[in-house]
Amino acid sequence: MKTGGQLIVDALVANGVKRVACVPGESYLAVLDALHDTNVDVLVCRQEGGAAMMADCWGRLTGEPGICMVTRGPGATNASAGLHIARQDSIPMILFIGQVQRDAREREAFQEVEYRRAFTEVAKWVAEIDDARRIPEFVTRAFAVATSGRPGPVVLALPEDMLTDTVETVAAKPYMPVEAHPGRKQMAELASLLEASERPLVILGGTRWSEGSVAAFTAFAERWSLPVACSFRRQMLFDHQHPNYAGDSGIGINPALGKEIREADLVVLLGGRYSEMPSSTYSLLKVPYPQQKLVHVYPDPSELGRVYRPDLAICAAPDDFVAALEGLAPKMAPRWADRTAALHESYLKWSTPPMTGPGDVQMGPIMAWLENNTAEDTIFTNGAGNYATWVHRFHRFRRFATQAAPTSGSMGYGLPAAVAAKQLHPDREVICFAGDGCFMMHGQEFATAVRYKLPIITVIVNNGIYGTIRMHQEREYPGRVSATDLTNPDFAALAIAYGGHGETVEKTEDFAAAFLRARASGKPAIIEVKLDPEAITPMRTLSDIRSGK
Image (cartoon, rainbow, N blue to C red):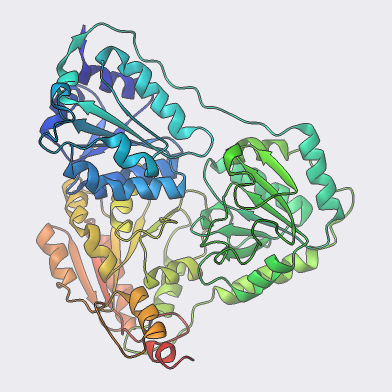
């Protein structure tokens, strides 16, 4: 005989859960009590959105569902930002929500929300467990749904009185991952399309990758001399220094790469949906019929043909598909090796940061210094804003599981993700990039880093404005500034007040020493970089945009 709370925790342990992010609430005290007697790490967060983003990051870096627990009503709606990120980014995650007691439902009881109506749009499956005896069934199903096909978030609501019921039921068993292998006929057709091609190109994206499948695909690309691009914020899927790497297909794409995608006669989309941002607002491939021959490999059949009609659709996850590539070898030396080399050379030029810019701080030299003074396994996290361009364009990712950033463009993600990444990989350096606007969305999770002694380094690029919105504002309504100026705290002092390490950088040459001091402190650190708002992009100023240059 066990309580519902004990059964929830038993099912988590049976499914291999090692960590949970939460903000506590009285609606699920029985679960918190059951966690007391386990070895599951519980990260107590300061806001439910940050907790959900931490769970997303765990799912992003491991492929296993990240677990988040929040209370009903405001707790659940706060967490919805993390749900939306996980949904658009195809990240496995399970959100457990305390719910009002069963006999009070449909009365608009205290903090009551009907989650099936509220969250169906941003979750793969939303359910409420009415009977504690069915907890093993529901939780194991949640793991299966979150990880199968196109991964995504699942929501389970837990009525408070159900969690205190004492019942007898079956012991939970771990979920079984669902695999989908490509057929031999499909692989033969892929080989024929490659053999007939003159200008092929592969674009990697999505989830359900592993370090092994990334290495195996790299070997395949080498055999065929294929140029390989990575989708928006999926840059960790291919070594940027590899001679086959052609760059990233995302916001602010290298024009040379965009031209090559448009002029390719064969595009292989592997693992990703190729949605609005990576496709340059659906302009690189025409919808619904691309001008290029298209091979689309994706683990969910409902996505194949949903936007683009492929010439060859293969329903398989990257791991399973890449395993089938092992025996696929060209019959003769590929004809496009020189094109692949030229694309890589173009990428190297594109990803070399400018050394000058307006103001006393230039981000180009700072990025160059970081490239020479961080390890290949350093994890970079960020949220959304123009500042992120410096990471996406100028940091050369070398290894799998070194990037955590939302393809949904959600602000505030970088700091909670950094906390989660450091908890997951305490032996690796974790650097969060944030804008001043982005940081303030979930900056309170710096307290979580301090509490758990997680020495992340947060670089706040502070230009005193909501930079992306100001850029668009100056383009559409030149000189008419409205609602985009910010007043900020002293971020270095804020870090110290939290119990961390703080630095302020007002000149380019001061950054290196500040970073080394932050690293040596052994504490969570904030380095505030005061950037001139004119330096709105690496190559253009606000004045340029205002004047239409």
